[in-house]
Amino acid sequence: MRNQVLFATLAALLLAGCGGGAAGTGSTLPGASSGGSGGSAPQSAQVQSEDSIASANAVGSPVKALNNVESSAGSPLATVGRGALAVTNGQCNSGVEYFVPDKNGDANSTERIVFYDQACTQIARDTVRKYTVIGTNAESVARSVTQYPQGNTTPSSVRSDNVTLSNATFGSNGFPIVADGFDRIESSTLNLTGVKSIESNAEYSIAAANAGVSSYCGDSAGFNATGISSLNETFGWAGGDLPGGTRTVNSDGSVTYSGTQSGTSYVGGIGALNIATGTQNTTCPITTPDFTLTGGTSKGSYSIPMTATYKAGLLENLSVTNAQLVDGDTLNVTTNTSQPPTSSNFISGVLTNSSGNQVSTFAVDAFGDGTLTVTQSGTQYVMNNWHVIK
Image (cartoon, rainbow, N blue to C red; front, side, top):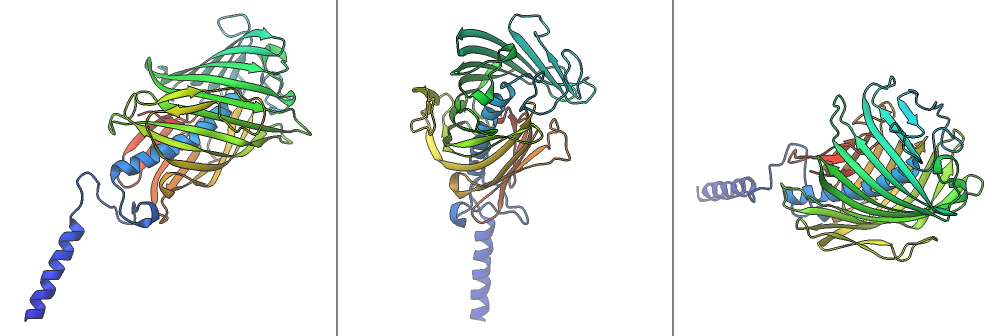
């Protein structure tokens, strides 16, 4: 009888221990676990969100930077090395319209409009570019990139880029000839409904091509200026492909960037992070990045082997395999080629912890607009231009 009472008491204590938990950690769903680094104590919902946001930003930073480099590296009217896109000035061409000069008729300008549909009726992204010659081999470029949600004529965001190109050879309409190499530096601000959300800076150095292959290196840093109000935190990133990677022109005219992005993820109080600027790099490898982050606290480092393919300046394939993120997490990214690039399910990412359990997923279009979902809590965050904004 005594043993029966003892066993009953122990069982009750064990059940109470299993049922108890720290407030705010969320419940564990069947088949889903959120074990922390090393598979030890479960992570809180806050940590899971922090790791998920940090990871999405870490992979998003180089993708956005390369998007900017490639989309402004040449005119669709001159398709050599950029994909055989048959573009006629001012006309709809399979979901793309291109104007020289821009629709306002500004001097030294171009405009590219990408649509959700092939008939060019639903605008997805409108990019206006204005350039100024500042030297024999240099120019400054002001770009305005307006993004529209599908089925909506009100912009979801407007990004302003200020770019300086140097050590370059320029072709028609002020575009750099990539095969000759160039150095590029950029400061960028993303605004949502008129409010500054993301600040970022980036530099890239691309060497002259040899048999269609160029070496490149670059670095970038940025942060969410408005922060994530539900977490009362802001997130930042700093890193790049410092040793260098390759840019290869493929047989179909598309180009593929291959390299490993490494850096550090940061978290801090809203308003705590800032970008520090050093000296521009014009050769590879980079030993001291031009852009770093100040303020906040390091969440940890990341290493992301990445391959990105562009055709006519548009991202058509992105692959990341077993990238190492903060807290020992692993990220894999694939492209759903059965979907159009403007689909919010075009690119998918899955973050898992060191125990192999899913932490979060994200699904975005080729412009980096979509949703990040934390698996256990079900919390969703909005991604825009390859970064988590709210």
